[in-house]
Image (cartoon, rainbow, N blue to C red):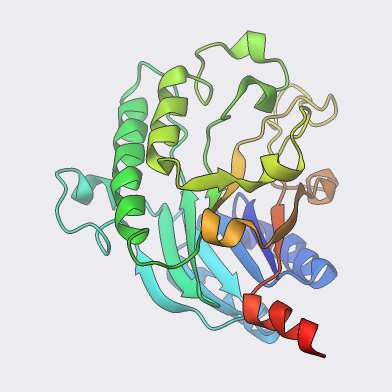
Length: 275
């Protein structure tokens, strides 16, 4: 089973890119971020014709997340408030469409688009802090349901210096501050493993290249798109990689897809030994 995450930076602008990529790569579950469209304008029919179900949470011009799946999508939860019953910042945090989760093929898929934060002295950074603190509560609650979890999306945080092309130039800069890294680590709480790093421990692995400063042409990227797995599914992961090819297309998203291959469900794999 192939599960992927991709910040498409407008689904309506990139729909042909996404459709062609799905067909070429035979992906089973695709989580999108920055869809940038209201739900009624999301091109659901394109995916339906390819045999996918779609669950969306969008808004005009900004943010937006979606889950596209070959398997049935069940128990959909949109926003924080469908999991967290009481939190002082819920009404503010739910205004931006940044989190959607569902049960698919006996896995809880959680798709997130974490705020960028703009700059460390801005109100947007305070919003990012609150969002990550709320994510911590959300993940603790979800993880009590005894289901394997795949948490993925655009995290807008480089977990380590090796996830940045020239880390010395970005010390305590947005997406690389010690505060953001700690907030993310606290949210994960030791229950989630960065599966990409299991298979690709080295540097120069980027998922995002700024449109400015010829970042793509100079390969000056960041790894800010992640896939995390809980221990009960981690051992079934076979590989994880970044597909840079879509970033080289004309008028691309500034992000590349990240994909994990999982031998799932386990019963199908185990049954092979009896034949």
